[in-house]
Length: 531
Image (cartoon, rainbow, N blue to C red):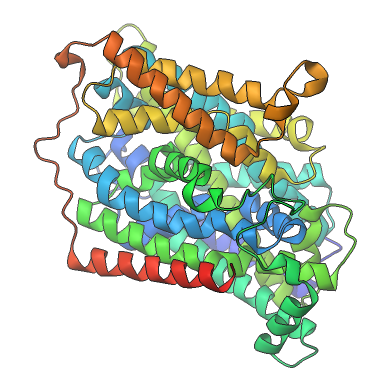
């Protein structure tokens, strides 16, 4: 590890041993108790609020965000932080209106909700789709971008880094499942926040020539003023990535609702809560952490504009800033980065195993009833296979990309309008049918392809010029209209909807309401300041 001093290697080794030991410790079961699917996939539905909030952030913030979003900060500026700050507002919506329905109905997976609401066909279709997306897009991007950072800082072969990260994350959670992941994520997030604040503080101090953080920030704003606008104007070279007001009132809401409300590996933490109250407290905790994230993952990328201009690729910004740290602190920040990669990878692996086991294997396996031990074993095998596939396909799929974060957002934008339509109609419109939901989802993909299809291949130049976030908004509206029309034209029997609303309450506590107001006020202030 030529890029790290001996003390840095020691710090990283201590972290790896400690977090692995902690994960195995919390994975223990009481004597005589055999781990079942609820234990393995939903942490016995006993997670406290602090574990839910920390695990939401740990699952979300990985190399995909730290390296990728820092790279976008280098190329675009603070505007990329809208993905973080608007997520804080989205979490409040999820906590108040989505979770009560999911928890009251005992939902374990998102495909399960779709079956209870619409029917078996859509459960199977979406389960297979999510497995493909999670393995070939999300899981590969996490370990690929993580390996970039590890290679840049530690100086080891990238393929070795890729393999070690993937296998460590697998072994870390293989025994305990979600319980091992969630109950250790408070340590992972604490290390992530501390490491991120350290690198932000030291880079700003360097820019300010030793004058302190405030002086460094003022100097950075002065020297890179074009990087401190939240709302990009039409003439901005990156307007197509973040098209002005669309980040506030347009397509970003569709992406965020799909990701935070209906994404298995995110919402799974809240589904494992002790109660709706604990889940909502965890959601608020995560929302406040989201407000801090741009300091940790975007600001270092902007600082690199001044400290390391002319990088070959924007995704090199964060690793390059890490190289400015002295021995010891470099090891700590590097451990924080590795912690984020491992936590997010382990979360993704567990969710892949959950969907495969409960929504595919258990539904299609014929013969004698399946025992709990058997299903847990299948989940562990599925987790192992998933990470091996991701390790083997990461370089072919992502190796030639410039800004991986933006690529992932655009690719996901093909399907997120359809996913959002399916769930919003399923949650809040009783007349929605399986045929309508499937029509809306299919239309989302087809219409998105029409917008994306290159002019050189016979596509429309006019449609190609539409920013992908605006594309998501337009596709959402058109696909929603189709889903409504098909649902009305092909009504389904009332018995096909097995989601119970009678006991669902959308009442929230005074603490939740005051916290939500606080988040909204802070967001309004940030957007006003950096408009």
